[in-house]
Length: 388
Image (cartoon, rainbow, N blue to C red):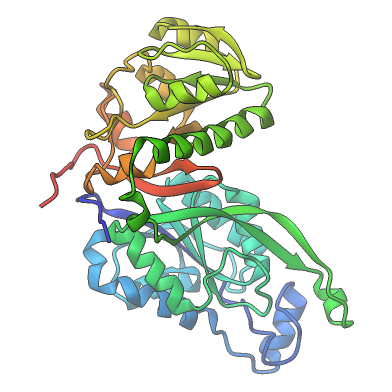
């Protein structure tokens, strides 16, 4: 399987709910709420979440020099990092030994602030719900099943499976990402024998990708079908955000999307649209700043084939000031999988002219490769290496 050639240290957020699952063996039907946890502990419940998180993390011990963990203190993450000899940075300290949902959410926010590449969390549906409340789909997550209730699709099937997928991501093996539902049930009703499951949101989860053989099909007709799927995905996003401006970057892939909407496009320039209507075409860097000031907007970009540049080649209108206002989370990067495969494992490059910004934009980014089909791929600007 293809791997990325990157010397950048992977930033892994780790979040453990130490009390997840403690009510299961005692038939308490869950562990949500301080009263239930106190009852479970009084009955001699054992905390298993750390053991299950350890099973996942053990998969990356052999490549620990490639990873830095970002953790909360104690059993929320620091304990495991120290035990396994993993490099870590402390981002949050709970006030009490018995942690609550607000500690989970505070840790998730701290990890978001650190701009980690992925968050590995151990818990149950309640934990997933807390993480989702803070993270949404802004950072990929991977759940280690450790709770009584595991209805959510954000969890791997076993802790070991989570570890295998985690190692793939850290080592730079190509993985897909998909939106997965976060579910939870009403524990009070569950204890009465009634199951009332509700969806509380979605998060992005890395999954094993088996598209490498299909990529090699190539051919113009095949790529045109893929481009149509990519365009359908972007058009759906535009329709879902009628009040947003969409900055359409240069390149043939973006040109295809504009053609699908019936909008005249500047192939080698930058255009602005809103609600599938052209607002401005072939704008300068200064015009772009003025037109997007105090507006909600997203940027549609593609990759320069064979090189991997996404900023700084043919789109200098996207100035550092514009990119800082935009935020990496508002970049919609599009490319066919054949174009990704042609990079031969090289990372993407941002060359904005602002080294601090380039470094800030390093890390994993989602590439839209089809209709509701995305892959994770790294931007690695400062330590770019040619594949061996």
